[in-house]
Each structure stands twice: as structure tokens, then as C-alpha cells.
Length: 219
Image 1 (cartoon, rainbow, N blue to C red):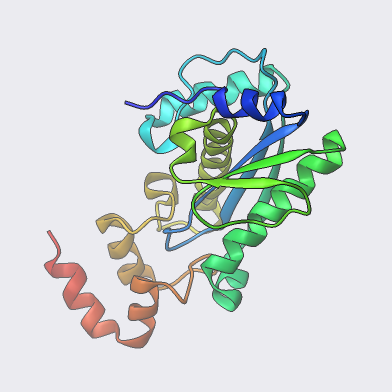
Image 2: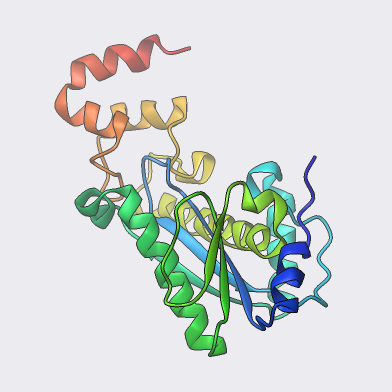
């Protein structure tokens, strides 16, 4: 079990970097809704019990951590890229754009940023020193915090779509490709927030009968 900590941030701080920011994104694999990135500046004095990779936390725990983050007035930025743009430029470029928007949003709030830590293996360019860390949300406190912020922010956002697009139960599956979600697509068709370039959605649009056969035979 990995527990995120400030080891890397402290090492960078000892090298002279003052404001060190962690960035992570969520929603890459979803069939509907935006991809969302969060950038967070976490002072070493911050004490939040239970922070780790958002994928390893139950929804209630993530929400409690998010509430703590808001109460502590921790500074963070959000980058959101909607499905129409994802379909136009692809998810790889869209997730990069979301991370850069989150960085800029935070930069506008706190001013100078000295170093960026990003979850993943792709080297990012922010115009300042940065480092990509594989499984960074399991190792680095700033990235883990960004993971929780991005996840809860996106979950809350897409859950509100139940009222806008009833019949898809977005609050249940958050736009991911669950059996329930596929059955909802089959029943109601594709909504404006579905990613038309994505697997099941693309399949439905191209060959509804074949898609229907697959959905109904799925256990």
C-alpha cells in the first residue's frame, strides 16, 4: 500500500524551488462528460488525513476530503474540456489542454509557480521546470490531492446532468461505460454530452443493431 507524502516536494524545496504544484486529471476513459484536471499548491504544513489516489477511495471518503480541502482554503485550479472538443482534437490532446488550463487557473490565483509535478509518463511543458511521475497520485502528496479535487469536482458536475438529461443516470456511473449506462444509451440514444468518438457511443451511432445485440447479451 502506497501512502502519498511530501518527500519529493521537500527535495525540490531544498533545491530552491518554493511554489511546487501537483496536477492530475480524471475522466479520460468516460463515455460522457468532460475530462477535468486539477492543479493544487499544498503547503508542507497541511494536514489532511487519508489523502491518496482518488481511485483507491470510496466516494464518501473523497467527498469528506474535498470538504476538508475547501475548509482549509487550499489553493487549486481547474481545467475542464468538454466532449465536443474531445471529439474534435482527441482525448490525449484534450487531457493535455485540461492540465494546462488547470495550471493557468491556479497561476492566476497564486502568482508565480516554480515547479510542476504531473501524474503520468508524458512530459508536459508549462514554461517552467516540471516532472512527470508514473503513479504519482500514489506517491506524491500534491498530486494525490489534485486527484481527489479533480475527481469530486467532475463527479459533482456530471451528477447534475441527471436533471438536464434524464434517463441516463449519470449520477450512478459518472459517465463511465457501465452496463447500466450502455442500456441507457440503447434506450434513449446519445445525449449532447456523450463522446461520439468513443467506443460504445461510436458503435451505437455506426451500427445500432450490432450494439443492441452486444448490450443485451452482456452479463
